[in-house]
Image 1 (cartoon, rainbow, N blue to C red):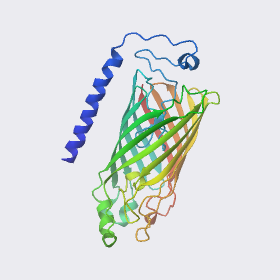
Image 2 (cartoon, one colour; image 1 turned 30 degrees about the vertical axis):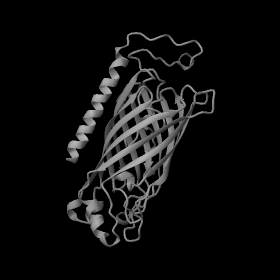
Image 3 (cartoon, rainbow, N blue to C red; image 1 turned 135 degrees about the vertical axis):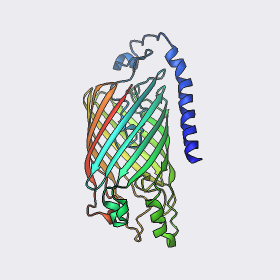
Length: 331
């Protein structure tokens, strides 16, 4: 019944998006921008069938499918659609650290530069780490679906260049963990503590982005309220509590050229599994990235990423660092 419900929800979303999209693509002409408008000043087009926003302003795809950097969600709406257009993208990301591997793929749709709908599937390869629990868990993969909604509520990162006002968006991500082995094992091992680590949870966040076109810099700060352990890959809640905790995501990006961006991100995470009986505490993650946008239809992002401690009680490496590569296609 659960799988049927998720498929039904996904089908309903796609149907709704199709119905909403028809009026935008049905337009045959669009008025020329005024000489002093942001469209003319910054070279933004807004005609039908034209991806109207500036190159790279849709960001790339995070590991959870939302528009932003690799780790942090931005206030910007994904894709290149303006307020009378629809944008969309698909992404595939691979990250490899000392003891783990992560693959994520998904799609996102931006509706009229106002609403973003996203979906990502994550597969986290534990390689040899869980052999300490059971030899049958060699190469075990933690899997998770992430469904997201983001809404722009204030400001505009591109057009508000002459004011201090940033772009502000609010959003949520529903995470459905498919693990049927590790989470039940942890619950059984800590039965006396009654941790009740759960397989699903919802994150809520507020993201603030400011783009300084004259300085070629974008800065973003996001506060996320979550119960997740390791982004939800180890479930939600635990012996340290079932309350929402605020976590911070910060990003800064510099445009060397219109098609080449470098930057850095940091994302805090604490989780609920640091109890001495588990010793599965978490640490903040960060990355340094470079993104290349040869066209508005393609972007490639490479990064050095440090995900902090992941199941440190079972590994010799207290911090998990390595390489990150992501390909995104869309409009």
